[in-house]
Image (cartoon, rainbow, N blue to C red):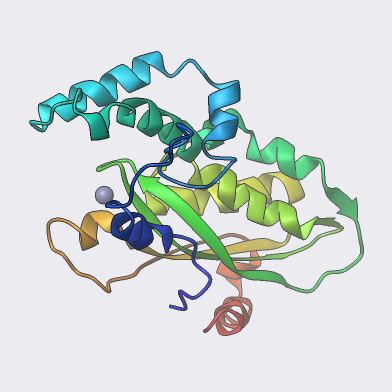
Length: 229
Ligand SMILES: [Zn+2]
């Protein structure tokens, strides 16, 4: 799997910077992502219950939530969690409906290598990778960026990769009623990499198909050929 365009390079750099002095402005957040922290800070101050739970979790693992380095951690983690699960507040089918156009094009449309970042609902650890999506229009097409947005909205919830794959297929099928939809997701799960079996390079692939992608071997083969790295 190509990983050059993935965005989580921040994780190692955060670790290597952990010995640097904190900025004096008080904006000693875990990341420089305005959308992640500033926006969440302004619009979602109600992280009390969540940050209290994080504080309890810190105690649960034997930490002292009152020591300097952890003082703001519960609030920071609460904001980060809200960001990582913001997909609950959006409706993917509504999002698609707003960008549907009538068009006679009836060949396969493929969007491949859509980056995705999600969280496994069993361990609350990230999984991340690529989604490849195809559909064959039947009179209606959808704005291509909306396909990536649908992936994003479903991924920003607690997930299992299998359900995520099917939800994306179903949203496209329900809104566009196309001749078929194909979805393939390839992802790495940190719950496999960092704990338990510690399989560093394992990649999980899931697929969900409908219509001609199921009934026609040649359609399915064409899709799989087009998304081959
Ligand atoms: Zn897991």
